[in-house]
Length: 345
Image 1 (tube, rainbow, N blue to C red):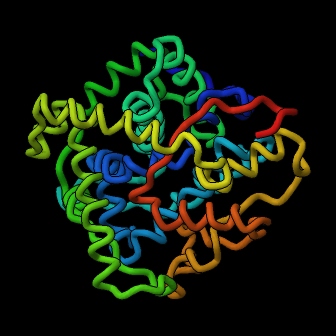
Image 2 (tube, rainbow, N blue to C red):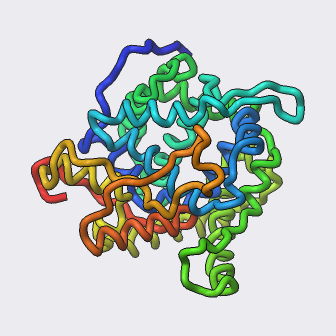
């Protein structure tokens, strides 16, 4: 593994595979997978245990965080500024865990692990729910994930030098470094409290989300590396694998006709509109809805992104924003080929 230089890079654009997959709603089906595997990294899990309010407001916390994370991919010339914004949220997340180990969210190895899980989120979503990837596409996505990571302005020291090196890094980290901690167990047993703005009885809400979260736990079990599955005490059979593959094909087919305004995250949709000339290149970035903000007693803390920005313009785009917001932990979405700039997107 060779350390990479810290030279700057251009932001990703609409011709990238990362643009094609990352903003599509279907990655929400891996919410439990990514939440658990991120938290299994000891320093990251400790930071979540000590500083996060995920269990207090999981839907809002995930939904609003996705906006700036999407921005590092889709904000074009402003992506590096968005990356610096995210880096700033992590400056005060530090301490000592229950084992006496010191941690800091801006430790390069810790920060890169979180990024690596987003890269693998794309790989696994495409493999299981979008028809698969060729080896050349995986290598392209790897190169793009390096370009994407440069937008954070972090040390490139932990970044593997090649796709082959990354696979070794991923396997060894899963096998030797990940652990089952309190933050991970909280993800496995998470309950989604009904937000105050959802007009339905709590009992109905709970019954709606129980099968969704249970389904995500099952998907997570299938997508974990064998070493991680063993640590988590999860069982996965060849029959489970067949069912998951069939389910993935059904999802791919079922959502082929869903419009982009619903399928794509609002930040991604706005980026495609800028790239195709359907909106100004300097149009204000789409932010999370105001009601997704952190609790009032936490809004002055530097670790929180406090949303507030231009609303989506059309009724269908507002509906799409609601879908992405409500089902951040249990979404279904298709992926189709994206159009190039200058064509309808």
